[in-house]
Image 1 (cartoon, rainbow, N blue to C red):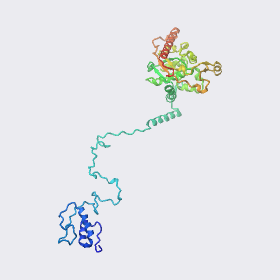
Image 2: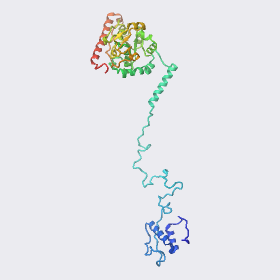
Image 3: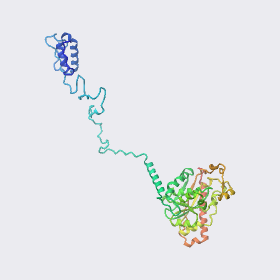
Image 4: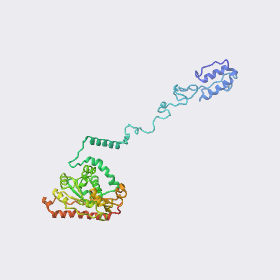
Length: 416
């Protein structure tokens, strides 16, 4: 082996190198000769000349040298006897490292197709359009934008208030939102006969009054605001005491309430508003619990005279559930005189539990608007006829009382 010529690795095929080494190695290169022959025999898949009888012996054993099988041409990129895929290795890649960008369609023997016609690829003709993702905070963004716009109008004074102090935007956006949870979730008000309130023009809604505190008027206002198909607003006539109390005075004006007098009622009806009146007044609001759902006197019938002058219908309204929110078992007249109130209620919880006693009981309410009583068929001078006013007042009162009894019979429980 000392006199063997060193040939750089990879310069010629192994078969030629093995043949030359077999002729030059003599007996001392038998091991190398046999190894080279075995490698050449393993590499060649087909032989152009069949091996002779001496192919398994070294040179000099027969008269002719052995014929070695030819090695088939190998594809480009096969070097040093290592199988390849026809591509030269990238010198920048390391052994055992796979390059993601080196994969090409068809390199695995396929034609690069996944078996589909490509019509379901995004952007391909006939492909279904992917739905655009909707922003999750769209509703909240809109509400925030409306809230900021509302605050900007309040700060800059860019809002309208009518001659009575009614602020429609503030009522719709703020005041109704504050009362609505009490209306929907606490008292769970059920409304019937809302279609009896006309969709346009003026009307006079006449209701019973009860509950120690005037929450029934607020619930009736929300009932009309939220349930009427035409989105009508109820303008309540309130007692003088409401406009003498601080804070309450401003809120009542903003919510559309006005003084319970014939002049204000006529002005509202002339403008085509829905006006609400509770003729019982403090007599109905502060009556004892034992007289619940028994209507008190309706006064002198001034509301009927107002309706006759303007020819608007009278809509009777009956409210069940308000009598039990503050069961009035007593009345401290001394405290009422000192505070300037028409009565000072004593209930099972007030004043014994302090401010907690002012929490109303969660009764189930029903508000029913009855069939309207028309007044447009009477002559203008009918408003001065006391007998006609008495008859119409009694008719309205009887209709409200009859509806109250009917609702009480239908009611399953005070709280359900």
